[in-house]
Length: 254
Ligand SMILES: NC(=O)c1ccc[n+]([C@@H]2O[C@H](COP(=O)([O-])OP(=O)(O)OC[C@H]3O[C@@H](n4cnc5c(N)ncnc54)[C@H](O)[C@@H]3O)[C@@H](O)[C@H]2O)c1
Image 1 (tube, helix red, strand yellow):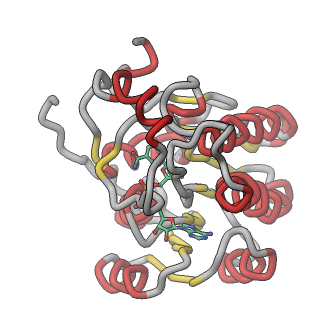
Image 2: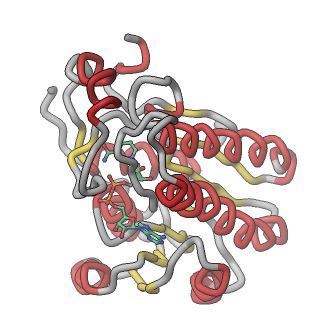
């Protein structure tokens, strides 16, 4: 992969408040850090406390809130900490499946994937839109996945949940497009993060997917994903609305 260096755009988020979910790890952490270093006030939310606190200790401008994005009371606390003005939302928190095809999927795993990846994205979005409507401006970026663009990148639950994230993105972009609110998504390919797989994986699923997964472009870093997310959240993304950006090194054209 080409050598790449993150380049901070000084002051790009000056005066802006941006909520970032999944901020304790991986893409969410890199996004929260980048926005704060570009002048933003970041409300960093995650279910795990210690790494969130470490981020806040490391990067000025980050305020933390421990909460589950699928819990309505927790979502209310996240948004309350943000305050009346919310300029941006990065819906990054998400969980992976075990590559199960539909004949193997458990209700438990299906429900968990939809509760976090889909309901959580909807709940945070629903909670911030009123403030954005009042301000007449706002930007939202959802993290979908390559699995939102094709059928051979994960199991049925993750694939379906990320297709749903695309639906939320497109509909919300359309609904508020004339109200100054932009809603876009990134669709990352492989990213080197701590994302966890369930303890066991589907032999059937991996048997089908393995050959495809071994041919994909090299994994990216969380910082590379954060570069696109920050761009779309910032005024640099001014005329972009309803886009699903494949941040996948070209996987989607294979
Ligand atoms: N890593 C990849 O290869 C990859 C590829 C495509 C898409 N994605 C997507 O990127 C996003 C971030 O993944 P990552 O790779 O940085 O993973 P990660 O596990 O490093 O980070 C995800 C964070 O989300 C948090 N989280 C999980 N459930 C939560 C909940 N209910 N409420 C609040 N926080 C919660 C976790 O605690 C974790 O800190 C996810 O939506 C994932 O589906 C990742």
